[in-house]
Length: 420
Image (tube, rainbow, N blue to C red; front, side):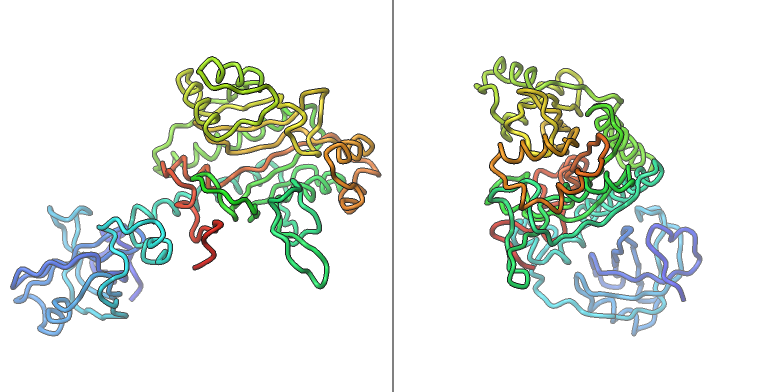
Protein backbone atom coordinates (compact mmCIF):
# COMPACT_ATOMS: atom_id res chain seq x y z
CA UNK A 1 0.00 0.00 0.00
CA UNK A 2 1.33 3.44 -0.95
CA UNK A 3 2.16 6.04 1.67
CA UNK A 4 -0.33 8.84 2.43
CA UNK A 5 1.01 12.20 3.61
CA UNK A 6 -0.82 13.88 6.47
CA UNK A 7 -2.13 16.73 4.31
CA UNK A 8 -3.80 14.22 1.94
CA UNK A 9 -5.61 12.23 4.60
CA UNK A 10 -9.08 13.46 3.60
CA UNK A 11 -8.66 11.97 0.13
CA UNK A 12 -8.45 8.38 1.40
CA UNK A 13 -10.76 5.88 3.07
CA UNK A 14 -7.78 3.86 4.17
CA UNK A 15 -4.30 5.33 4.66
CA UNK A 16 -0.73 4.30 5.36
CA UNK A 17 1.06 6.85 7.54
CA UNK A 18 4.84 6.83 7.86
CA UNK A 19 6.52 9.20 10.28
CA UNK A 20 7.74 9.92 13.79
CA UNK A 21 5.84 9.78 17.06
CA UNK A 22 5.17 13.34 18.14
CA UNK A 23 3.11 12.61 21.24
CA UNK A 24 1.44 9.72 23.11
CA UNK A 25 -1.37 10.14 25.65
CA UNK A 26 -2.46 6.95 27.38
CA UNK A 27 -5.64 7.37 29.40
CA UNK A 28 -6.30 3.73 30.10
CA UNK A 29 -8.57 2.13 27.55
CA UNK A 30 -7.89 4.85 24.95
CA UNK A 31 -4.51 5.95 23.57
CA UNK A 32 -4.17 9.16 21.56
CA UNK A 33 -1.14 9.00 19.29
CA UNK A 34 0.16 11.85 17.13
CA UNK A 35 2.43 10.97 14.21
CA UNK A 36 4.35 13.63 12.32
CA UNK A 37 5.58 13.61 8.73
CA UNK A 38 7.07 16.42 6.66
CA UNK A 39 3.63 17.81 5.76
CA UNK A 40 2.12 17.92 9.25
CA UNK A 41 0.59 15.70 11.91
CA UNK A 42 -1.98 12.89 12.07
CA UNK A 43 -4.01 11.94 15.14
CA UNK A 44 -4.46 8.20 15.68
CA UNK A 45 -6.92 6.85 18.22
CA UNK A 46 -6.57 3.33 19.60
CA UNK A 47 -9.49 2.11 21.73
CA UNK A 48 -8.76 -1.10 23.60
CA UNK A 49 -12.10 -2.62 22.66
CA UNK A 50 -11.81 -1.68 18.96
CA UNK A 51 -8.26 -2.75 18.03
CA UNK A 52 -6.33 -5.98 18.41
CA UNK A 53 -4.34 -6.56 21.59
CA UNK A 54 -1.11 -6.56 19.55
CA UNK A 55 -1.84 -3.13 18.05
CA UNK A 56 -2.91 -1.66 21.39
CA UNK A 57 0.14 -3.00 23.24
CA UNK A 58 2.51 -1.79 20.51
CA UNK A 59 1.08 1.74 20.61
CA UNK A 60 1.19 1.75 24.42
CA UNK A 61 4.95 1.13 24.32
CA UNK A 62 5.73 3.89 21.82
CA UNK A 63 7.85 6.88 22.81
CA UNK A 64 8.61 10.25 21.25
CA UNK A 65 10.46 10.18 17.93
CA UNK A 66 10.03 6.44 17.38
CA UNK A 67 9.78 5.82 13.64
CA UNK A 68 6.50 4.09 12.74
CA UNK A 69 4.49 2.74 9.81
CA UNK A 70 0.73 2.62 10.48
CA UNK A 71 -2.16 1.46 8.31
CA UNK A 72 -5.72 2.33 9.29
CA UNK A 73 -9.16 3.63 8.42
CA UNK A 74 -9.71 7.37 7.95
CA UNK A 75 -12.67 8.86 9.81
CA UNK A 76 -13.95 12.39 10.23
CA UNK A 77 -13.20 14.12 13.54
CA UNK A 78 -14.40 17.34 15.16
CA UNK A 79 -11.38 17.35 17.47
CA UNK A 80 -8.45 16.67 15.11
CA UNK A 81 -6.99 19.81 13.50
CA UNK A 82 -7.12 18.31 10.01
CA UNK A 83 -10.73 17.23 10.49
CA UNK A 84 -9.75 13.59 10.15
CA UNK A 85 -8.11 10.93 12.28
CA UNK A 86 -6.91 7.37 11.80
CA UNK A 87 -8.21 4.19 13.42
CA UNK A 88 -5.18 1.84 13.38
CA UNK A 89 -5.28 -1.67 11.98
CA UNK A 90 -1.56 -2.45 11.84
CA UNK A 91 1.34 -0.74 13.59
CA UNK A 92 4.98 -1.40 12.81
CA UNK A 93 7.89 0.14 14.69
CA UNK A 94 10.44 0.77 11.95
CA UNK A 95 13.13 2.13 14.29
CA UNK A 96 12.98 3.06 17.94
CA UNK A 97 14.53 6.29 19.21
CA UNK A 98 17.02 6.06 22.07
CA UNK A 99 15.94 7.74 25.29
CA UNK A 100 16.53 10.28 26.60
CA UNK A 101 16.55 12.36 23.43
CA UNK A 102 19.52 14.74 23.09
CA UNK A 103 17.15 17.40 21.81
CA UNK A 104 13.58 18.24 22.77
CA UNK A 105 11.71 20.68 20.54
CA UNK A 106 9.60 21.74 23.51
CA UNK A 107 12.70 22.89 25.40
CA UNK A 108 15.12 25.68 24.45
CA UNK A 109 18.21 23.56 23.88
CA UNK A 110 20.50 26.31 22.62
CA UNK A 111 21.76 26.92 19.11
CA UNK A 112 24.92 24.82 19.31
CA UNK A 113 23.07 21.75 20.60
CA UNK A 114 20.41 22.14 17.92
CA UNK A 115 23.00 22.40 15.15
CA UNK A 116 24.86 19.35 16.49
CA UNK A 117 21.64 17.36 16.13
CA UNK A 118 20.28 19.19 13.08
CA UNK A 119 18.41 16.09 11.83
CA UNK A 120 16.39 16.12 15.09
CA UNK A 121 16.08 19.90 15.01
CA UNK A 122 14.38 19.69 11.60
CA UNK A 123 11.67 17.50 13.08
CA UNK A 124 10.31 20.69 14.61
CA UNK A 125 7.74 21.95 12.06
CA UNK A 126 8.80 25.57 12.64
CA UNK A 127 12.39 24.74 11.70
CA UNK A 128 11.36 22.54 8.79
CA UNK A 129 9.26 25.42 7.42
CA UNK A 130 12.35 27.64 7.13
CA UNK A 131 13.97 25.12 4.80
CA UNK A 132 10.81 24.49 2.81
CA UNK A 133 10.64 28.26 2.19
CA UNK A 134 14.34 28.29 1.30
CA UNK A 135 13.66 25.49 -1.20
CA UNK A 136 10.80 27.50 -2.73
CA UNK A 137 12.90 30.68 -2.96
CA UNK A 138 15.74 28.95 -4.80
CA UNK A 139 13.28 27.26 -7.15
CA UNK A 140 11.62 30.59 -7.94
CA UNK A 141 14.99 32.23 -8.63
CA UNK A 142 15.78 29.46 -11.14
CA UNK A 143 12.34 29.98 -12.71
CA UNK A 144 12.87 33.72 -13.08
CA UNK A 145 16.27 33.45 -14.73
CA UNK A 146 15.26 30.70 -17.11
CA UNK A 147 12.04 32.45 -18.11
CA UNK A 148 14.08 35.57 -18.87
CA UNK A 149 16.56 33.85 -21.17
CA UNK A 150 19.47 33.50 -18.74
CA UNK A 151 21.91 30.59 -19.13
CA UNK A 152 22.94 28.76 -15.96
CA UNK A 153 26.69 28.27 -15.51
CA UNK A 154 28.84 26.46 -12.95
CA UNK A 155 32.19 28.12 -12.29
CA UNK A 156 35.10 26.43 -10.45
CA UNK A 157 35.07 26.30 -6.67
CA UNK A 158 38.85 25.79 -6.77
CA UNK A 159 40.39 29.02 -8.01
CA UNK A 160 43.85 30.53 -8.55
CA UNK A 161 42.89 34.00 -7.28
CA UNK A 162 40.11 35.66 -5.33
CA UNK A 163 37.69 38.18 -6.76
CA UNK A 164 37.93 40.34 -3.67
CA UNK A 165 41.55 39.57 -2.71
CA UNK A 166 42.80 40.25 0.79
CA UNK A 167 42.72 38.05 3.88
CA UNK A 168 39.22 36.62 3.40
CA UNK A 169 40.46 33.77 1.20
CA UNK A 170 40.65 30.13 2.26
CA UNK A 171 44.06 29.00 0.93
CA UNK A 172 45.11 25.38 0.42
CA UNK A 173 47.73 23.27 -1.33
CA UNK A 174 46.63 22.23 -4.81
CA UNK A 175 49.17 19.73 -6.18
CA UNK A 176 52.02 21.87 -4.86
CA UNK A 177 50.48 25.16 -5.94
CA UNK A 178 48.61 27.76 -3.92
CA UNK A 179 44.88 27.71 -4.57
CA UNK A 180 41.79 29.18 -2.97
CA UNK A 181 38.18 28.27 -2.33
CA UNK A 182 35.81 30.40 -4.38
CA UNK A 183 35.27 33.77 -2.76
CA UNK A 184 32.89 34.67 -5.58
CA UNK A 185 32.16 33.49 -9.14
CA UNK A 186 32.69 37.12 -10.18
CA UNK A 187 35.73 36.74 -12.44
CA UNK A 188 34.28 33.76 -14.30
CA UNK A 189 30.92 35.48 -14.77
CA UNK A 190 32.68 38.39 -16.46
CA UNK A 191 34.72 36.06 -18.64
CA UNK A 192 31.44 34.63 -19.93
CA UNK A 193 30.47 38.11 -21.10
CA UNK A 194 33.29 37.78 -23.64
CA UNK A 195 31.95 34.42 -24.84
CA UNK A 196 28.60 35.46 -26.24
CA UNK A 197 26.68 34.13 -23.22
CA UNK A 198 25.37 37.61 -22.55
CA UNK A 199 22.90 36.70 -19.76
CA UNK A 200 24.11 34.15 -17.22
CA UNK A 201 23.39 33.17 -13.63
CA UNK A 202 24.87 30.87 -11.03
CA UNK A 203 23.56 29.70 -7.67
CA UNK A 204 26.32 28.06 -5.67
CA UNK A 205 28.52 28.03 -2.58
CA UNK A 206 31.09 30.72 -1.87
CA UNK A 207 33.56 30.95 1.01
CA UNK A 208 34.77 33.85 3.15
CA UNK A 209 37.59 33.45 5.69
CA UNK A 210 36.42 36.25 7.95
CA UNK A 211 36.69 35.85 11.73
CA UNK A 212 33.24 37.30 12.25
CA UNK A 213 30.97 37.02 15.27
CA UNK A 214 27.73 38.45 13.94
CA UNK A 215 24.29 37.17 13.04
CA UNK A 216 24.78 38.27 9.43
CA UNK A 217 27.84 36.32 8.35
CA UNK A 218 28.81 32.76 7.43
CA UNK A 219 32.08 31.19 6.31
CA UNK A 220 30.19 29.29 3.60
CA UNK A 221 26.97 30.50 2.04
CA UNK A 222 24.87 30.20 -1.10
CA UNK A 223 25.36 33.10 -3.49
CA UNK A 224 22.86 33.72 -6.28
CA UNK A 225 24.73 35.67 -8.97
CA UNK A 226 23.86 37.01 -12.38
CA UNK A 227 25.74 38.94 -15.06
CA UNK A 228 24.29 40.69 -18.12
CA UNK A 229 26.02 42.26 -21.14
CA UNK A 230 25.25 45.15 -23.48
CA UNK A 231 24.01 47.33 -20.62
CA UNK A 232 23.80 51.13 -20.70
CA UNK A 233 24.51 51.61 -16.98
CA UNK A 234 24.11 50.05 -13.55
CA UNK A 235 20.43 50.93 -13.82
CA UNK A 236 19.94 47.88 -16.06
CA UNK A 237 21.39 45.71 -13.27
CA UNK A 238 19.06 47.21 -10.67
CA UNK A 239 16.01 46.68 -12.90
CA UNK A 240 16.91 42.99 -13.38
CA UNK A 241 17.47 42.46 -9.65
CA UNK A 242 14.29 44.19 -8.48
CA UNK A 243 12.25 42.26 -11.04
CA UNK A 244 13.75 39.00 -9.76
CA UNK A 245 12.86 39.92 -6.16
CA UNK A 246 9.32 40.86 -7.16
CA UNK A 247 8.92 37.55 -9.05
CA UNK A 248 10.13 35.50 -6.08
CA UNK A 249 7.90 37.35 -3.58
CA UNK A 250 4.85 36.95 -5.81
CA UNK A 251 5.64 33.26 -6.17
CA UNK A 252 5.91 32.79 -2.42
CA UNK A 253 2.61 34.57 -1.84
CA UNK A 254 0.93 32.39 -4.48
CA UNK A 255 2.18 29.31 -2.57
CA UNK A 256 0.63 30.48 0.70
CA UNK A 257 3.68 32.14 2.30
CA UNK A 258 2.80 35.29 4.22
CA UNK A 259 4.93 37.95 2.50
CA UNK A 260 4.32 41.49 1.32
CA UNK A 261 5.13 41.80 -2.37
CA UNK A 262 7.19 44.96 -2.94
CA UNK A 263 6.36 47.48 -5.63
CA UNK A 264 8.92 48.16 -8.32
CA UNK A 265 10.94 50.20 -8.98
CA UNK A 266 12.70 50.15 -5.60
CA UNK A 267 13.88 53.43 -4.10
CA UNK A 268 17.35 54.57 -5.21
CA UNK A 269 19.43 56.30 -2.50
CA UNK A 270 22.88 57.64 -3.32
CA UNK A 271 25.75 57.04 -0.92
CA UNK A 272 25.87 60.81 -0.29
CA UNK A 273 22.17 60.81 0.66
CA UNK A 274 22.64 57.79 2.94
CA UNK A 275 25.53 59.48 4.78
CA UNK A 276 23.47 62.65 5.27
CA UNK A 277 20.50 60.69 6.62
CA UNK A 278 22.70 58.79 9.07
CA UNK A 279 24.57 61.89 10.25
CA UNK A 280 21.23 63.62 10.77
CA UNK A 281 20.16 60.63 12.89
CA UNK A 282 23.21 61.14 15.14
CA UNK A 283 25.66 58.63 13.62
CA UNK A 284 28.98 60.22 12.72
CA UNK A 285 30.20 58.95 9.35
CA UNK A 286 33.08 60.39 7.36
CA UNK A 287 32.53 60.54 3.61
CA UNK A 288 34.36 57.63 2.01
CA UNK A 289 33.80 55.12 4.83
CA UNK A 290 31.95 51.92 4.04
CA UNK A 291 28.67 51.43 5.89
CA UNK A 292 28.95 49.06 8.86
CA UNK A 293 26.25 46.67 10.05
CA UNK A 294 24.89 49.03 12.72
CA UNK A 295 24.76 51.92 10.23
CA UNK A 296 22.97 49.77 7.64
CA UNK A 297 20.44 48.72 10.29
CA UNK A 298 19.79 52.35 11.22
CA UNK A 299 19.40 53.32 7.57
CA UNK A 300 16.89 50.49 7.23
CA UNK A 301 14.82 51.95 10.08
CA UNK A 302 14.90 55.38 8.43
CA UNK A 303 13.88 53.98 5.04
CA UNK A 304 11.06 51.88 6.54
CA UNK A 305 9.60 55.02 8.08
CA UNK A 306 9.65 56.50 4.59
CA UNK A 307 7.78 53.45 3.28
CA UNK A 308 10.68 51.58 1.66
CA UNK A 309 11.52 48.02 2.73
CA UNK A 310 13.75 47.43 -0.30
CA UNK A 311 16.12 50.14 -1.53
CA UNK A 312 19.29 50.46 -3.55
CA UNK A 313 22.34 52.39 -2.35
CA UNK A 314 24.16 53.80 -5.38
CA UNK A 315 27.19 55.93 -6.33
CA UNK A 316 29.57 54.51 -3.74
CA UNK A 317 33.03 56.07 -3.38
CA UNK A 318 35.51 54.50 -5.80
CA UNK A 319 38.04 53.67 -3.10
CA UNK A 320 35.77 51.24 -1.24
CA UNK A 321 34.70 49.19 -4.26
CA UNK A 322 36.57 46.21 -5.82
CA UNK A 323 38.80 46.64 -8.87
CA UNK A 324 36.25 45.20 -11.29
CA UNK A 325 33.55 47.83 -10.54
CA UNK A 326 33.51 50.68 -13.07
CA UNK A 327 34.82 53.91 -11.58
CA UNK A 328 33.52 57.35 -12.47
CA UNK A 329 35.96 59.81 -10.92
CA UNK A 330 35.69 59.75 -7.15
CA UNK A 331 32.45 57.74 -7.43
CA UNK A 332 31.76 54.24 -8.73
CA UNK A 333 28.94 52.52 -10.51
CA UNK A 334 28.64 50.06 -7.65
CA UNK A 335 25.31 49.32 -5.99
CA UNK A 336 23.98 47.50 -2.94
CA UNK A 337 20.45 46.22 -2.37
CA UNK A 338 19.27 46.42 1.24
CA UNK A 339 16.12 44.93 2.74
CA UNK A 340 15.03 46.43 6.05
CA UNK A 341 18.58 47.32 7.02
CA UNK A 342 20.29 44.15 5.80
CA UNK A 343 22.47 44.10 2.69
CA UNK A 344 21.21 41.35 0.37
CA UNK A 345 23.16 42.03 -2.80
CA UNK A 346 26.18 43.92 -4.04
CA UNK A 347 27.13 44.64 -7.63
CA UNK A 348 26.88 47.24 -10.34
CA UNK A 349 28.39 47.98 -13.73
CA UNK A 350 31.80 46.37 -14.34
CA UNK A 351 34.87 47.82 -15.97
CA UNK A 352 35.08 46.34 -19.50
CA UNK A 353 38.03 48.36 -20.86
CA UNK A 354 41.23 46.30 -20.66
CA UNK A 355 43.65 49.17 -20.11
CA UNK A 356 41.51 50.82 -17.43
CA UNK A 357 40.96 47.49 -15.65
CA UNK A 358 44.70 46.78 -15.44
CA UNK A 359 45.39 50.35 -14.26
CA UNK A 360 42.82 50.09 -11.44
CA UNK A 361 44.14 46.68 -10.37
CA UNK A 362 47.60 48.18 -9.91
CA UNK A 363 46.17 51.16 -8.01
CA UNK A 364 44.44 48.76 -5.62
CA UNK A 365 47.67 46.86 -4.96
CA UNK A 366 47.00 43.81 -7.14
CA UNK A 367 49.42 42.25 -9.60
CA UNK A 368 47.66 41.92 -13.00
CA UNK A 369 49.93 38.95 -13.86
CA UNK A 370 48.19 36.95 -11.12
CA UNK A 371 44.90 37.55 -12.95
CA UNK A 372 45.91 37.02 -16.58
CA UNK A 373 43.49 34.06 -16.90
CA UNK A 374 40.79 36.68 -16.27
CA UNK A 375 42.15 39.86 -17.88
CA UNK A 376 42.92 38.08 -21.16
CA UNK A 377 39.17 37.89 -21.76
CA UNK A 378 39.13 41.69 -21.99
CA UNK A 379 41.78 41.89 -24.71
CA UNK A 380 39.64 40.65 -27.59
CA UNK A 381 36.41 42.56 -27.19
CA UNK A 382 34.01 42.44 -24.26
CA UNK A 383 30.78 44.48 -24.14
CA UNK A 384 29.65 46.76 -21.27
CA UNK A 385 28.25 44.51 -18.57
CA UNK A 386 27.21 44.27 -14.94
CA UNK A 387 25.70 42.02 -12.35
CA UNK A 388 25.32 41.17 -8.67
CA UNK A 389 26.06 38.65 -5.95
CA UNK A 390 23.01 37.88 -3.78
CA UNK A 391 23.11 36.40 -0.27
CA UNK A 392 20.47 33.66 -0.28
CA UNK A 393 20.63 32.97 3.47
CA UNK A 394 20.13 36.64 4.34
CA UNK A 395 17.05 36.79 2.12
CA UNK A 396 15.64 33.59 3.65
CA UNK A 397 16.32 34.95 7.15
CA UNK A 398 14.33 38.11 6.42
CA UNK A 399 11.43 36.22 4.84
CA UNK A 400 11.21 33.73 7.72
CA UNK A 401 11.91 36.39 10.39
CA UNK A 402 15.01 34.60 11.66
CA UNK A 403 17.46 36.86 13.52
CA UNK A 404 20.51 34.75 12.68
CA UNK A 405 21.46 33.65 9.15
CA UNK A 406 22.90 30.44 10.65
CA UNK A 407 19.28 29.36 11.17
CA UNK A 408 18.73 29.30 7.39
CA UNK A 409 21.53 26.91 6.42
CA UNK A 410 21.47 23.19 7.23
CA UNK A 411 24.97 22.86 8.64
CA UNK A 412 26.41 26.35 9.21
CA UNK A 413 30.13 26.95 8.90
CA UNK A 414 31.59 29.61 11.19
CA UNK A 415 35.10 30.30 12.62
CA UNK A 416 34.18 27.97 15.51
CA UNK A 417 32.08 25.34 13.73
CA UNK A 418 33.40 22.71 11.31
CA UNK A 419 31.12 19.78 12.26
CA UNK A 420 28.71 18.18 11.79
